[in-house]
Length: 340
Image (cartoon, rainbow, N blue to C red; front, top):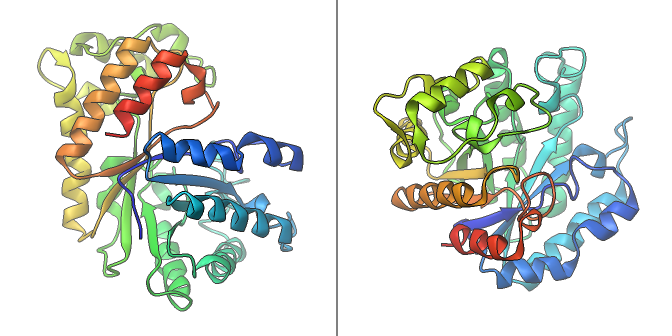
Protein backbone atom coordinates (compact mmCIF):
# COMPACT_ATOMS: atom_id res chain seq x y z
CA UNK A 1 0.00 0.00 0.00
CA UNK A 2 1.32 3.43 -0.98
CA UNK A 3 1.57 5.93 1.89
CA UNK A 4 2.62 9.49 1.07
CA UNK A 5 1.38 11.54 3.98
CA UNK A 6 4.45 12.55 6.02
CA UNK A 7 7.89 11.45 4.88
CA UNK A 8 11.55 12.34 4.96
CA UNK A 9 14.34 12.59 2.40
CA UNK A 10 17.51 10.51 2.46
CA UNK A 11 19.56 13.25 0.83
CA UNK A 12 23.31 12.76 0.56
CA UNK A 13 23.10 8.95 0.64
CA UNK A 14 23.05 7.99 -3.05
CA UNK A 15 23.11 11.54 -4.41
CA UNK A 16 25.13 14.75 -4.06
CA UNK A 17 27.86 12.67 -2.49
CA UNK A 18 31.21 11.04 -3.05
CA UNK A 19 30.27 7.99 -5.10
CA UNK A 20 32.31 5.42 -3.22
CA UNK A 21 31.34 2.16 -1.54
CA UNK A 22 32.64 3.31 1.84
CA UNK A 23 30.19 6.22 1.79
CA UNK A 24 27.22 4.09 0.69
CA UNK A 25 27.98 1.53 3.40
CA UNK A 26 28.02 4.07 6.22
CA UNK A 27 25.79 7.08 5.50
CA UNK A 28 22.40 5.34 5.90
CA UNK A 29 22.02 1.90 7.47
CA UNK A 30 19.05 -0.42 7.88
CA UNK A 31 18.76 0.75 11.48
CA UNK A 32 18.17 4.29 10.21
CA UNK A 33 15.14 3.10 8.25
CA UNK A 34 13.82 1.42 11.40
CA UNK A 35 14.39 4.66 13.31
CA UNK A 36 12.50 6.65 10.65
CA UNK A 37 9.55 4.32 11.09
CA UNK A 38 9.74 4.77 14.86
CA UNK A 39 9.70 8.54 14.33
CA UNK A 40 6.28 7.95 12.69
CA UNK A 41 7.13 8.94 9.12
CA UNK A 42 5.27 6.81 6.59
CA UNK A 43 7.62 7.10 3.60
CA UNK A 44 11.11 8.00 2.47
CA UNK A 45 12.21 9.81 -0.65
CA UNK A 46 15.50 8.38 -1.91
CA UNK A 47 17.43 10.77 -4.17
CA UNK A 48 19.64 8.76 -6.55
CA UNK A 49 22.30 10.01 -8.97
CA UNK A 50 22.64 8.19 -12.27
CA UNK A 51 26.15 7.12 -11.20
CA UNK A 52 24.52 4.52 -8.94
CA UNK A 53 23.11 2.73 -11.97
CA UNK A 54 25.49 3.56 -14.82
CA UNK A 55 29.09 4.33 -15.64
CA UNK A 56 29.87 7.51 -17.55
CA UNK A 57 29.91 5.39 -20.69
CA UNK A 58 26.41 4.14 -19.91
CA UNK A 59 27.28 0.61 -18.83
CA UNK A 60 25.08 -1.00 -16.18
CA UNK A 61 26.38 -1.18 -12.59
CA UNK A 62 24.86 -4.33 -11.14
CA UNK A 63 26.02 -3.51 -7.61
CA UNK A 64 24.11 -0.22 -7.74
CA UNK A 65 20.88 -1.86 -8.81
CA UNK A 66 21.30 -4.45 -6.05
CA UNK A 67 21.97 -1.77 -3.43
CA UNK A 68 18.65 -0.11 -4.27
CA UNK A 69 16.94 -3.53 -4.04
CA UNK A 70 18.41 -3.85 -0.55
CA UNK A 71 17.18 -0.40 0.50
CA UNK A 72 13.70 -1.16 -0.82
CA UNK A 73 13.84 -4.33 1.26
CA UNK A 74 14.61 -2.28 4.38
CA UNK A 75 11.56 -0.09 3.74
CA UNK A 76 9.32 -3.11 3.17
CA UNK A 77 10.37 -4.60 6.51
CA UNK A 78 9.32 -1.35 8.17
CA UNK A 79 6.08 -0.76 6.24
CA UNK A 80 7.37 2.38 4.54
CA UNK A 81 6.72 3.60 1.01
CA UNK A 82 9.83 4.59 -0.94
CA UNK A 83 10.15 7.11 -3.75
CA UNK A 84 13.01 6.51 -6.20
CA UNK A 85 13.95 10.05 -7.19
CA UNK A 86 16.42 10.41 -10.07
CA UNK A 87 18.22 13.36 -8.56
CA UNK A 88 20.88 13.82 -11.21
CA UNK A 89 20.65 12.41 -14.72
CA UNK A 90 23.42 11.94 -17.24
CA UNK A 91 23.52 15.30 -19.01
CA UNK A 92 21.46 17.15 -16.41
CA UNK A 93 22.32 18.52 -12.97
CA UNK A 94 20.26 21.30 -11.35
CA UNK A 95 23.54 22.65 -9.94
CA UNK A 96 24.66 23.38 -13.52
CA UNK A 97 21.58 25.44 -14.38
CA UNK A 98 21.86 27.44 -17.61
CA UNK A 99 25.21 25.85 -18.54
CA UNK A 100 24.44 24.28 -21.91
CA UNK A 101 27.89 22.73 -22.11
CA UNK A 102 26.95 20.48 -19.18
CA UNK A 103 23.16 20.37 -19.22
CA UNK A 104 22.41 18.84 -22.63
CA UNK A 105 19.34 16.79 -21.75
CA UNK A 106 16.78 19.07 -23.33
CA UNK A 107 18.43 19.62 -26.70
CA UNK A 108 20.56 16.50 -27.31
CA UNK A 109 18.49 13.53 -28.50
CA UNK A 110 21.18 11.01 -27.63
CA UNK A 111 21.13 12.23 -24.02
CA UNK A 112 17.35 12.05 -24.00
CA UNK A 113 17.51 8.49 -25.34
CA UNK A 114 19.84 7.55 -22.52
CA UNK A 115 17.47 9.15 -19.97
CA UNK A 116 14.51 7.15 -21.28
CA UNK A 117 16.54 3.93 -21.46
CA UNK A 118 17.64 4.34 -17.85
CA UNK A 119 14.03 4.71 -16.77
CA UNK A 120 13.10 1.61 -18.75
CA UNK A 121 15.83 -0.26 -16.85
CA UNK A 122 14.67 1.13 -13.50
CA UNK A 123 11.04 0.26 -14.22
CA UNK A 124 11.93 -3.25 -15.35
CA UNK A 125 14.06 -3.81 -12.26
CA UNK A 126 11.74 -2.50 -9.56
CA UNK A 127 8.13 -2.26 -10.78
CA UNK A 128 6.98 -5.40 -8.95
CA UNK A 129 7.41 -3.76 -5.55
CA UNK A 130 4.07 -2.55 -4.20
CA UNK A 131 5.54 0.10 -1.88
CA UNK A 132 7.40 2.04 -4.54
CA UNK A 133 6.92 5.28 -6.51
CA UNK A 134 9.04 6.61 -9.39
CA UNK A 135 10.11 10.27 -9.63
CA UNK A 136 11.40 11.15 -13.08
CA UNK A 137 13.84 13.98 -12.26
CA UNK A 138 14.50 16.06 -9.18
CA UNK A 139 14.55 19.67 -10.35
CA UNK A 140 14.47 21.16 -13.83
CA UNK A 141 15.60 24.76 -13.62
CA UNK A 142 15.72 26.51 -16.99
CA UNK A 143 12.57 28.25 -18.21
CA UNK A 144 13.59 27.62 -21.80
CA UNK A 145 13.36 23.88 -21.11
CA UNK A 146 9.65 23.91 -20.25
CA UNK A 147 8.31 22.41 -23.49
CA UNK A 148 11.23 20.05 -23.97
CA UNK A 149 10.61 18.80 -20.42
CA UNK A 150 6.94 18.20 -21.24
CA UNK A 151 8.01 16.23 -24.32
CA UNK A 152 10.46 14.14 -22.30
CA UNK A 153 7.88 13.49 -19.58
CA UNK A 154 5.41 12.19 -22.15
CA UNK A 155 7.98 9.98 -23.85
CA UNK A 156 9.36 8.57 -20.58
CA UNK A 157 5.97 7.90 -19.02
CA UNK A 158 4.83 6.12 -22.20
CA UNK A 159 7.83 3.77 -22.02
CA UNK A 160 7.38 3.12 -18.29
CA UNK A 161 3.71 2.33 -18.87
CA UNK A 162 4.69 -0.42 -21.30
CA UNK A 163 6.34 -2.10 -18.31
CA UNK A 164 3.99 -1.17 -15.47
CA UNK A 165 0.55 0.39 -15.62
CA UNK A 166 0.10 0.83 -11.89
CA UNK A 167 3.34 2.20 -10.43
CA UNK A 168 2.79 5.84 -9.54
CA UNK A 169 4.96 8.39 -11.32
CA UNK A 170 5.94 11.78 -9.89
CA UNK A 171 7.09 14.85 -11.82
CA UNK A 172 6.96 18.61 -11.43
CA UNK A 173 7.53 21.89 -13.19
CA UNK A 174 10.62 24.01 -13.79
CA UNK A 175 12.51 26.67 -11.79
CA UNK A 176 13.62 24.16 -9.14
CA UNK A 177 10.18 22.51 -9.06
CA UNK A 178 8.51 25.72 -7.97
CA UNK A 179 4.80 25.93 -7.20
CA UNK A 180 4.32 28.67 -9.74
CA UNK A 181 5.48 26.50 -12.67
CA UNK A 182 3.03 23.61 -12.34
CA UNK A 183 0.86 25.61 -14.73
CA UNK A 184 3.37 24.93 -17.53
CA UNK A 185 2.83 21.17 -17.33
CA UNK A 186 0.46 19.53 -19.81
CA UNK A 187 -2.94 18.20 -18.70
CA UNK A 188 -2.65 14.91 -16.82
CA UNK A 189 -4.39 11.89 -18.34
CA UNK A 190 -2.71 9.08 -16.39
CA UNK A 191 -4.57 8.38 -13.11
CA UNK A 192 -1.37 7.14 -11.44
CA UNK A 193 0.37 10.50 -11.79
CA UNK A 194 1.49 12.64 -8.85
CA UNK A 195 2.43 16.28 -9.43
CA UNK A 196 5.13 17.61 -7.13
CA UNK A 197 6.60 20.92 -6.07
CA UNK A 198 9.36 21.90 -3.65
CA UNK A 199 8.72 24.49 -0.99
CA UNK A 200 11.49 26.64 0.47
CA UNK A 201 9.61 29.93 0.51
CA UNK A 202 10.48 32.59 1.38
CA UNK A 203 13.98 31.72 0.20
CA UNK A 204 15.58 34.53 2.18
CA UNK A 205 14.44 32.79 5.36
CA UNK A 206 14.92 29.10 4.59
CA UNK A 207 18.37 29.62 3.02
CA UNK A 208 19.77 32.37 5.25
CA UNK A 209 23.58 32.31 5.50
CA UNK A 210 23.77 29.61 2.78
CA UNK A 211 27.48 29.42 1.96
CA UNK A 212 26.78 28.66 -1.71
CA UNK A 213 24.89 31.98 -2.01
CA UNK A 214 27.39 34.74 -1.07
CA UNK A 215 24.70 37.44 -1.23
CA UNK A 216 23.00 35.81 1.74
CA UNK A 217 25.71 37.17 4.02
CA UNK A 218 24.59 40.69 3.17
CA UNK A 219 21.06 39.70 4.16
CA UNK A 220 22.19 38.36 7.54
CA UNK A 221 19.80 36.85 10.10
CA UNK A 222 16.13 36.51 9.20
CA UNK A 223 13.26 35.88 11.59
CA UNK A 224 9.88 34.28 10.99
CA UNK A 225 7.42 35.84 11.13
CA UNK A 226 8.66 39.36 10.44
CA UNK A 227 7.57 42.45 8.59
CA UNK A 228 6.92 42.44 4.85
CA UNK A 229 9.17 45.51 4.69
CA UNK A 230 12.12 43.53 6.12
CA UNK A 231 11.51 40.64 3.73
CA UNK A 232 11.26 42.90 0.69
CA UNK A 233 14.55 44.52 1.65
CA UNK A 234 16.18 41.08 1.86
CA UNK A 235 14.58 39.78 -1.34
CA UNK A 236 15.83 42.82 -3.23
CA UNK A 237 19.40 41.86 -2.31
CA UNK A 238 18.85 38.42 -3.87
CA UNK A 239 17.89 40.06 -7.14
CA UNK A 240 14.58 38.41 -7.93
CA UNK A 241 14.98 34.92 -6.47
CA UNK A 242 12.11 35.74 -4.12
CA UNK A 243 9.88 37.62 -6.55
CA UNK A 244 6.76 36.48 -4.70
CA UNK A 245 7.98 38.36 -1.64
CA UNK A 246 8.23 41.57 -3.64
CA UNK A 247 4.57 41.16 -4.62
CA UNK A 248 3.33 40.77 -1.04
CA UNK A 249 1.01 43.34 0.50
CA UNK A 250 0.10 43.84 4.13
CA UNK A 251 2.36 44.24 7.11
CA UNK A 252 3.58 40.77 8.13
CA UNK A 253 5.30 37.85 6.41
CA UNK A 254 3.58 34.92 8.08
CA UNK A 255 1.26 31.99 7.47
CA UNK A 256 -0.87 34.02 5.06
CA UNK A 257 2.10 34.17 2.68
CA UNK A 258 2.55 30.39 2.92
CA UNK A 259 -1.17 29.86 2.25
CA UNK A 260 -0.97 32.11 -0.79
CA UNK A 261 2.04 30.30 -2.25
CA UNK A 262 0.63 26.81 -1.64
CA UNK A 263 -2.69 27.88 -3.17
CA UNK A 264 -0.83 28.63 -6.40
CA UNK A 265 0.25 24.97 -6.52
CA UNK A 266 -3.17 23.65 -5.51
CA UNK A 267 -5.01 25.71 -8.14
CA UNK A 268 -2.51 24.87 -10.88
CA UNK A 269 -2.63 21.15 -10.10
CA UNK A 270 -6.42 21.23 -10.23
CA UNK A 271 -6.35 23.07 -13.56
CA UNK A 272 -4.21 20.38 -15.22
CA UNK A 273 -6.25 17.56 -13.73
CA UNK A 274 -3.62 16.18 -11.34
CA UNK A 275 -4.99 13.28 -9.27
CA UNK A 276 -2.60 14.10 -6.42
CA UNK A 277 -0.32 16.95 -5.31
CA UNK A 278 2.82 16.33 -3.27
CA UNK A 279 5.70 18.33 -1.75
CA UNK A 280 8.93 16.44 -2.41
CA UNK A 281 11.16 18.77 -0.41
CA UNK A 282 10.75 21.46 2.23
CA UNK A 283 12.93 22.56 5.12
CA UNK A 284 15.09 25.25 6.69
CA UNK A 285 18.88 25.54 6.77
CA UNK A 286 20.63 24.84 10.07
CA UNK A 287 21.91 28.44 10.20
CA UNK A 288 18.41 29.79 10.92
CA UNK A 289 17.36 30.63 14.49
CA UNK A 290 15.84 27.45 15.92
CA UNK A 291 12.60 28.92 17.24
CA UNK A 292 11.93 30.75 13.97
CA UNK A 293 12.64 27.57 12.02
CA UNK A 294 10.15 25.65 14.17
CA UNK A 295 7.49 28.32 13.66
CA UNK A 296 7.98 28.19 9.87
CA UNK A 297 7.70 24.39 9.92
CA UNK A 298 4.55 24.49 12.05
CA UNK A 299 2.85 27.00 9.75
CA UNK A 300 3.94 25.14 6.63
CA UNK A 301 2.68 21.77 7.89
CA UNK A 302 -0.58 23.39 8.96
CA UNK A 303 -1.12 24.64 5.41
CA UNK A 304 -0.24 21.25 3.92
CA UNK A 305 -2.80 19.73 6.26
CA UNK A 306 -5.46 22.24 5.24
CA UNK A 307 -4.95 21.15 1.63
CA UNK A 308 -4.45 17.39 2.19
CA UNK A 309 -0.94 17.56 0.72
CA UNK A 310 1.62 14.86 1.49
CA UNK A 311 5.24 15.89 1.90
CA UNK A 312 8.82 14.81 2.60
CA UNK A 313 11.06 16.85 4.90
CA UNK A 314 14.55 17.73 3.66
CA UNK A 315 16.43 15.95 5.16
CA UNK A 316 17.32 13.08 7.54
CA UNK A 317 21.09 13.63 7.81
CA UNK A 318 23.64 16.36 7.11
CA UNK A 319 23.25 18.33 3.83
CA UNK A 320 22.91 21.65 5.76
CA UNK A 321 19.24 20.86 6.53
CA UNK A 322 19.47 17.56 8.40
CA UNK A 323 17.64 16.85 11.65
CA UNK A 324 20.94 15.67 13.15
CA UNK A 325 22.48 19.12 12.73
CA UNK A 326 20.28 20.54 15.48
CA UNK A 327 20.52 19.87 19.19
CA UNK A 328 18.60 16.86 20.49
CA UNK A 329 15.62 18.81 21.83
CA UNK A 330 15.20 20.82 18.63
CA UNK A 331 15.53 17.65 16.55
CA UNK A 332 12.70 16.04 18.52
CA UNK A 333 10.52 19.09 17.91
CA UNK A 334 11.25 18.93 14.17
CA UNK A 335 10.14 15.30 14.08
CA UNK A 336 7.02 16.07 16.10
CA UNK A 337 5.98 18.87 13.73
CA UNK A 338 6.84 17.10 10.47
CA UNK A 339 5.02 13.87 11.31
CA UNK A 340 1.66 15.50 12.16
